Image 1: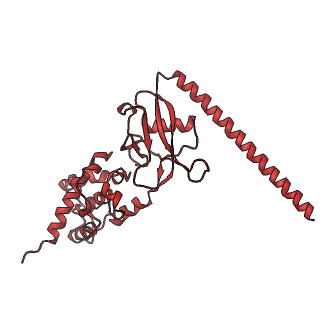
Image 2: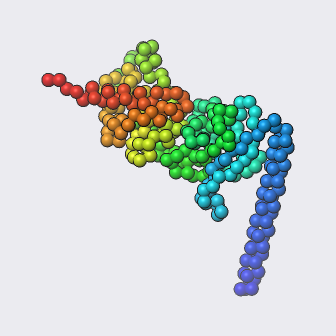
Length: 285
């Protein structure tokens, strides 16, 4: 009986070893095909550019230590950082991991640290950068794999300001109207795409994990300044953002405004909320 069990275990181990070997051979053939296609593409390109990409995979032995891999990719008019990363993934290393979706600077999923600055991969033209191009994940966030960072804390900060319309007085029989002047006032703040580039650039957020951050405060601005919510809700929102880790932690460094891919005047919005908070606390007897 014991001999039969040992024989079965040996057969199982042999099958697993054979499957593992087949997978390795298949991966090797795939990588060879990818390199062959890449070499053909690169030979036809008028010009190429080298990108140095941050790599890290905590689940794979041998890849747990962070490093940079260099890829040579085609350069042509209009090519973006995201285009180059997709090319590197599809032609050199299918395990290269990064986020992207709309490719139109709307989803905010491909924010990266490129040549020492937070940028959107789909919006950043290769021609505007110094070569070779260094591509890293957003600083001040936990790296999950390669260029992907954990966004949970950022989303928690955004949710903390209650980023949705609230009002106690709904009109009867007609839409909730907003004046043209008020719409213009909050218009820029509505352009936020939750990319976290501003949060990543903020030195205060890097040192204070509880700081709401420029994106969340901008979202609070969008609703606090909306005339349709009423005075009570504005007071409620000001109470949220004037806490110890709210607007008063901002040191007006303008780094968030500089890296915002949607050109939102984040620092100005934070300063205006500071003024509103002061006015709401003033009492005259």
